[in-house]
Length: 503
Image: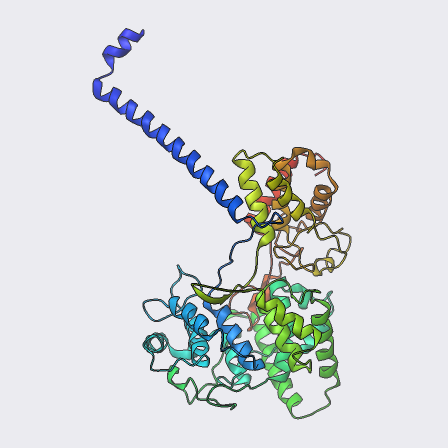
């Protein structure tokens, strides 16, 4: 078929349609290139002077609420921040009166209850329109009876909930050796870092004052309960119910163990010999102090930092003591105050943000030899963790250090995901870096962290004892760190780009 035949066989409307498609395709290409150019310009506009990038890591309102609780407990003045915190919390309340764990999630009683309490501590009256809507939401969704475990603990510290209605969190758990199937290193790193200081808090079972005073049976939030006269709420089924419903197994074992621990805890409270408890609390404190960064951070995330400060203070460390002072300074570095109000990040993500920016710029064809890219690369390289300590060493003693953590200060918990992303970013920016010491050490550490099932997890090796989620304390099923498709996929991408037969 020649051109003349083509011209006669294709109708005029069809030719117009082809032209429109071509125009649309060209327009889409132009828009894509324009958007890419704008994205590049924006990245370089917000790049820090030393070469790295970091964006705000948004948290739900519980994090800021718990910051308010900490200040109330420690007697820290919130006067200058009060209006800013109120603005932030009230601006994030949903139309139904609730607060949720994320913008696109519906509200829940725990997050709403914590945000409500924070506002009351800040001086917002219970008859404020926003708090009346929150009250209506909580009551219509089962009242504070529906709180999760961690909210129960936060409320117990103010006498709003009985301490004996939370699962036993015995400090003696620190003494269980790593060879045991159940020990602190069998927990995920985020649970471990949060719970060890929590062991100390549980030992003290403190009661702190609220604006209406201090009481072990504080009625400050009784109007948010369906039955405020009965706060002895079960957090698990009875041993018999669990056994009949599930038969013998981990859930039945942990439920029975929790009942036994409650009995032992009552004996402890009757001043029976407490040498083991005192020794365990001391070992917990040593663990907390050992895991504190020189900058004051713990694990680079807010929950261990909050619990670390509170635990040390309850254990006799004054506010001006070095570990508590540094811990408070680290927490303040997680705060943001701007036109949106005062809030607290749960974590900060400079390594992750920087390497993703480098990967995006490389994929968009930006010259890796540009000084801005070199600055970013140098910033990342200097933060490679080459210290031979870290919880990952407990079950990977032969592994050699070479990973990166997500945060500014977190030498104890490098993670596989960030490290794989760094390998990808370095190789894309400069393929010759495959032979550099930085990349080689990163690859060796990553390979050493492969789990027995062939995959990779975030922070630990073979942290796959998912039966631990049957512990009554775990109402969010997040006590383990097993292999995950996204981390494994990123490692495989890194290894594919490396293209080294040794790996």
